[in-house]
Image (cartoon, rainbow, N blue to C red):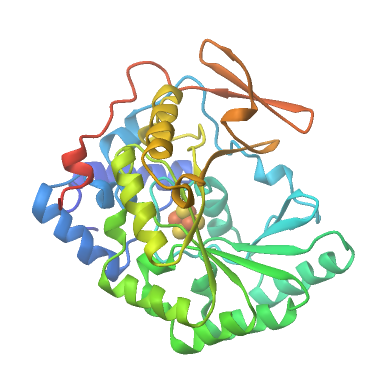
Length: 358
Ligand code: SF4
């Protein structure tokens, strides 16, 4: 049980029931992140941006929209190898490899909640080595695939020896690692790990959602990684209650730019079950996008706002129709419908709460 200072007992019990019955991820917070969380609670109480990243709030359980699904991007329909839910391929030249189901902490907004908890409950979990050998065999039969994206779970949680094995086995392919370890468990980036990632010329894509996630310890680690010549990028979701204000995004993007992290994409949250708490209306998303665009230099405003869908990633310029709450995107001759939030749900977070240190 987590201390009542952090979450009320009743809410925690209700959430735990949903973990068991509805495959939500159990609350998990690293000691490193917990220190920041306590600082935030001591300053503004519960419900701040770091809090909502890892602790369920009442709205997470109670707020529903008329159209939502467990797996909006339908990852489980894109498994090219039979009985291998850990290999996901949506594009011809790259694939996602769920190298582990373990994360250093569980994000409340995780779009992969359902699939991750399925992996975690599965009795058929394979060893990392078996997964890599299966993946390698598939890659060898697919000459068009050039890039393997390690995802999860958090790929860095597999530890040095497993990572070394994976990178050695897959050295023919470009490797990209998506991770939140830098904010949850920066100590995982030991000199040995940094050297290994550098030697294999991997691309590191950090998921950092809020400027307060980058403290001195994180900054120092990012500098060590940069000095080793590792290419660093960022992708993160736009989340109500966490970073739904252009001032927060600009602060975060500038901070990352100063640390040589190249911003790639800001993701619009999927209409997934238990996700309404973090979603933002399309009107407000476009307003935030414009504010970021108009108030930042081009190396910041080149960041793309994207939405992952069943037909791949789409952007604002891919909208071909708006009819009521239904917005239709088109890509490569295919279309997909996205349903905007129902009215009355999207209440913007107060900036004094989002940037409580200022
Ligand atoms: S670290 Fe990534 S995979 Fe793990 S809970 Fe957070 S968003 Fe999901």
